[in-house]
Image: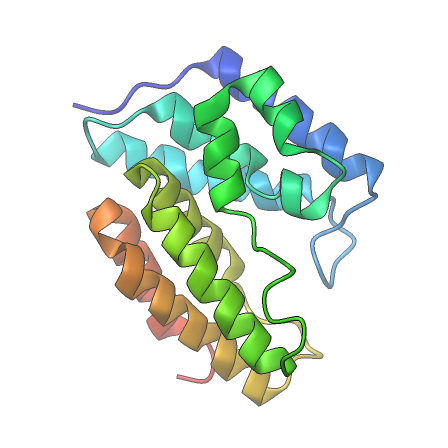
Length: 189
């Protein structure tokens, strides 16, 4: 049995995310592709997992996949998401949002590690649908790295993916297998 989700709720969340990211003129980093490509791919990964998994709130998973970067990368507030999509979706998106105030006085690498640990802890306190969004996000981001990335940056990005896999793999065996393969196929292995 697959987990059901609403196409109408998908359209509402997709449009909201597209407008929020477009107002900021966001592009997929290192490309001329509108950012909607990224969250569309994250949602596609989640929808594929929902076909394989059961007993999940498909609407929560899909809406959070589409909206996962709206608080972090746009002018969207938590309160706007509560008003438009409800508390569960807003809470999921908030858990997926890195706290930029963590480690302000630390070196860049230490700051990133602390923010990632905090983010994963927040995600683990949410339903497993939110865990799935984070795995889908990293699967989508494990494309060939931008040409300007150093070997060190590529290595650290892959190491972060391993941490995400280790902390969240119980949420979905389907996404865990996809993430594991992407990690092993990623450059610098």
